[in-house]
Amino acid sequence: MNSTQGKSEKPPCSICGEVGNGIHFGAEACRACAAFFRRSVALNKGYRCRGNGKCEIVSTIRCMCRSCRFGKCIAVGMKKEAVQKYRDAYGKRGSDVESPGTSGASVIGSMPNFASLESVEEGGMPILNTLGANYAKLESVRRVVHHEQGASVFQTRVPKAVTYKEANEVSSKECDLVADWILNSYPGFSDLPKEQKKILFRNFFLPFVILQGGHFACIHNRNDVIILASGDYIDCSHPETFYYDPDGRQLMSSEDAVRMFASSFSNYRRNVTDPMLRDNVDSYEFFALCSLVLFDTGLEGQSEECIIVSRRIREAIQREILYYYRNHYKELRGDFKKMSKLVMYLTSIP
Image (cartoon, rainbow, N blue to C red; front, side, top):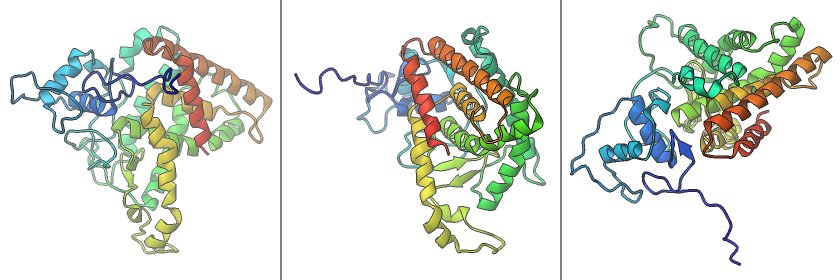
């Protein structure tokens, strides 16, 4: 028997015939076609065919007709309402991130419309749905907290590459915001003693920042920058800009810092952004990961009461994300496999 027989192969993209990357917006698609459709809908793009409206759409054609490509996306079952509205404002993409189209200025991507998923929830995902609604509020507050001095909060903020000092300032501002998000999203958490809340939060915040960077990468389909909560970003292609100190008080030159620390960018990409992009981790999966990290057990100083609450919430989150998979990915019939992959991300987070 041929050793290649019996091995499952990914179904081809229903738009261009390239190797598929799973179900996107209701149809089997490759990453490039999924990104094309998402960008077209999010930016409300209008295309005009220069032919007769029947152009061939195959991956071997370098410059496919966008009008016919978009039309085929609709024809094979892609749904506009499934697209999360955002606009890309982070400059030119890395050469290995496939996503055609033009970029435009914007603030950080908005959350998906949770109201549109009421049919999925049906009372089965109360915690995840609360996390999503409160996270949308958190992002609105961020636009005010992180706006530059002298700038109007009503104007579109153009993201910029930041230095390590600016990134640290963003993280400092985020602590209280994220703590408030947690406090208002989990049943029973607010009842824990203050010291127990601190133990959980100290263990949670850094992994949350790392996971959130992967979440932003999925929203913007980027793996060449690390997007921060402020909407600004770390330029991984030019790490010397991150290690630059405009005050000239750094203990080593930017070049020396790059030699010592630049590998951390490639490690982050390999362990976080690339896997999350490959598996198209969505917002609900991100919230589930955050929950599993936050409610860890066996932490130093953690009380028995806190352990019981943590286990209860972890079990509730696992039930909810499984419910989500079974209702939102009926055509995949791989809910346990997806859940196993989700848990594997936790091993990559320090």
